[in-house]
Image 1 (cartoon, rainbow, N blue to C red):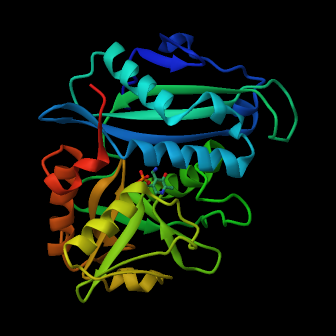
Image 2: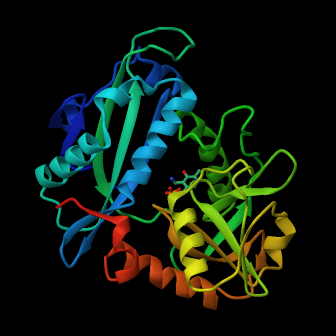
Image 3: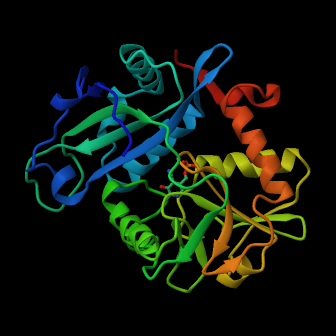
Length: 305
Ligand code: PMP
């Protein structure tokens, strides 16, 4: 279990974690009506830096817009978001790599099943940067549960309540002795893992499901595609079949909490190499970007401590 740091930003102020509470009557609790993002803060030579902070802010705003709960935006400019992140890091005397979770909760009491015009509360808290999947050869199982489609609950909106779908799928994988799941869409195509995007390599080409494949538009996914292009690795975003994963040369997951996780087995089929050459190169570059040792990608970092 990851540890939550003591000071939490809740509403308009920093409070102790025990005092950052929502009512049992709020839509956030009743329906999971909240949207969130998690960004990493890592140690660099110049202090602590947040990765792609403005992209996380933008995705949070977009998620809220899709759900019709974006009334917080006029009060929450990116500048305020950044300032609060810095205050939070300082208040918790952070000295190591951590994850920061920022959430917009619908805190209105018993409004019924609707979203627009309701009271929201913003929270931000820090927890241990523990990877959610093994970093040296994770094992995946195709989920018995399908990914909720865009026409039911859009995956590009990071909605708390939608994560019961991920919980069902990952628990199914854990129950069967695997580390995580491969989520398929309603047509049997590959989407992603429970909380990470998926990539495969075939004949030197880096392939990942496109953004119309019921995936979360991951910020690390976007980063990996850009970095691969900079490394002259050919990339393709398209519909992916499950059996393509079985015969891939390399498969990896990527995400804030998965980092870059090489996959060694899917449904009892061994992946050719884990990590393969391309995965290992991208893994190394990802680590160096997060920790500020890659001169080309300094613009992804915001000093927060
Ligand atoms: N897909 C899902 C369902 C996720 O929850 C996450 C984690 N946020 C990702 C993909 C990866 O997204 P990111 O790279 O922005 O962390």
